[in-house]
Image (tube, rainbow, N blue to C red; front, side):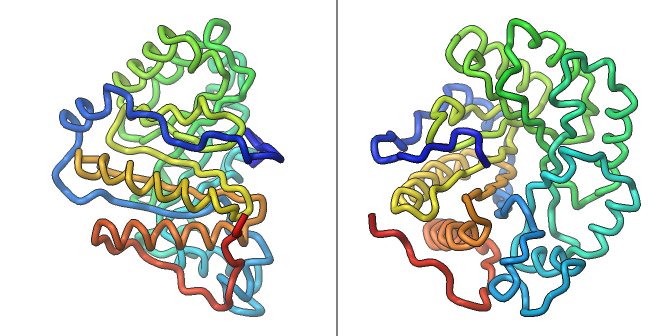
Length: 303
C-alpha cells in the first residue's frame, strides 16, 4: 500500500486523535448489546511466500484461499478493484473458504474513480449482483476514493450515488483528498450524510497522511486499515493504542470491526496481526481466532 508511505518515520506523531463527538451518541442510538463481531485479516491471500509459514509446504496456488480462510476470518479483496467478479467466481471463493469467513470486496475503480457515476450504471448493477452472491459471507465492502477526488468538484455526484446504494448491502467509505478533512464544514457534512445513509467509514492509519485517521464512526460497523512499517517498534506501540481505543468502542456497542493489516511485505502482516489478536484477546477476554504458524517469523524491530 503506497498511499501515505514514508521512508522516514522517526518524527511522526502516531498518537490517535480523539474520537469524533458523534461516535458515542451514534453507537448508543444504533449499536446493539451483543458482543462485537471482530474480523482480522490481510489484503491478499495469493502471496507465494506465505507457503511454509501460513500455508503448508507445497500448497498449490489454487488452495491458497482454502488455507488462508482457516487462519484468518476476513480478507480485503483488492482484486475486485480491477475486475467485477462473476457469480461463478464468487461461488468458487465461497467453496474454498469456511462458512464463517467474511469477504470485504473493494468497489471496482470503474465506479469509485469515475468522474460521472451515472455513466456506469451497468457496472454498478453487475457489482451489486456480485455482492449479493456472497450471501452471509459478505463482510464490509468498501469504496476507496482516489486522492484527486475533491469535494467541491465531485462531492455532489458522489453523494448522489451513495444515496442510491441498496439498503440491504453494507458499504464503508474511504475519503482521501485533504479537503475532506481540512475544511470542518465539508468534513461534518460528509460524515452527517454517511450516517444518514447508514454507511460506514474506513479509518486508515498510515504514517504520511495523519488526516485520514479521522476517528469518525457513522454506523456501528467500521473498517480500520492499519499500515505498518516493516515491524518497526512503533508498529507495536500503535497497535497498543488501537487496542485501548477499540475497547471504548466495544463498550459503547460497536457491532462489527474489520481490522486489516498492511505491511510492505505480506509475511510481516502475519506477525502484527497475531500481536493485535493476542492483545485484544488478553485485554477483553475475547476469542478472536489466532493463526497457527508453521514456522517462526520476523522478530520485532528494536529500533
